[in-house]
Image 1: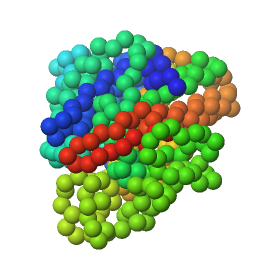
Image 2: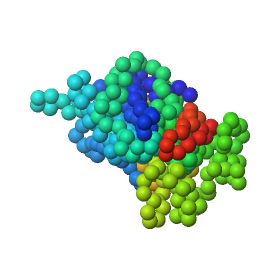
Image 3: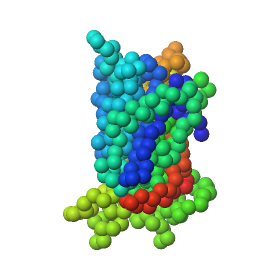
Length: 357
């Protein structure tokens, strides 16, 4: 499978808190100085910070850190702690008197899943995750499953446990493409029709596309039933936590976050196109994806240490197509890795079983 840290210079730090009402965390991707970045958002319910700064037409093309966090919009406060660490390390856009770190962030919805709606990441947790990333060495192993921002992640409309996954691909020209995914999805994974399932409750048999579909023994209701206002609110409450259920039932709240990293020498526009192309991997891994109830967001980082063939326009285009195809493949692999490494948890808000790809 590999890991995002197979891209030289990329480091990942996870911090999480569980118990006493907590089930959340923060993951920080720390790239080498001078790394170009971009973002693509295709979900209908994103929670992001500094995403506009990653537009290829803006002043600063580089990124100092990327923050993936729990806590929905509240959890974006974790980015302030990462900015503090970057400033202390002298990382950021130079301005008179100091630096301004460029630290984009995105959050998943995990509020209340540990039992306490107010238990969510803040600046201290973000700072600790940056410290953890900086302490790692190049090529280090990356934590998977119930770690960092994946600690409170769920899939299947809040029924099964999601988590952190990672993967990488090395192309013949020496380009490495890696991905880190936080899988907190409304949908369920696609798996190959010939694959064998491991132990676990399982959501039922596969349909011809390879999707695990609900069955009579499944605890996952069909989509239409899952999102209609129930006559008995208990099933929805078990999926969404202790928030009020007055009025019509709402869609479960979700979001899958991904960081794609490569050692290729991409500029800002090429990073943006790579982030967009990577969304195909998310759609191949999860059904449904990019819904109004998902904030699906993909960042792309390019460290620029390996030159692409730019001798002719066709050569450049072929290099980019190969890289972007690999990016979509590695995103799919990282998402399935996150689901397969997620472990069951029980909290006062509910019991969340392992899906087991």
